[in-house]
Amino acid sequence: MAYDKQELIDKALEVIEKHNLFFISDVIAFLPCSSATFYNYELEKLEDIKSAIEKNRVATKINMRNKWYQSDHPTLQVALMKIISSDDEAHRLNGSRQEIKHEGNIKSTIVEWKPAESEQ
Image (cartoon, rainbow, N blue to C red):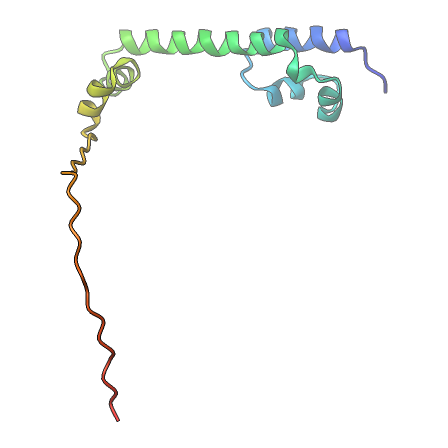
């Protein structure tokens, strides 16, 4: 079955907006064509489709962060703090900063090799 590329593009943009889709595989599931057809037309490379998906991702992330900010739930507040904090603040929250100090001196040890004694 032959498809009109522009119709597929229009349908893809429509389902991305209507269903708030984030992934190409989800877009393909809503289209009346196979994934092979979608990729043969190189629709995944189109800037319109990529930007519509990215717009959904960004809008959803902003919405979630706003909900986390408004929430009194400590877990959500800590998660938001980890996202917006500087590296130093994040390490303090996680208790994960590990410092490795090296003096710069190289110490060598000579090990003498001695053959094992035989038990005969």
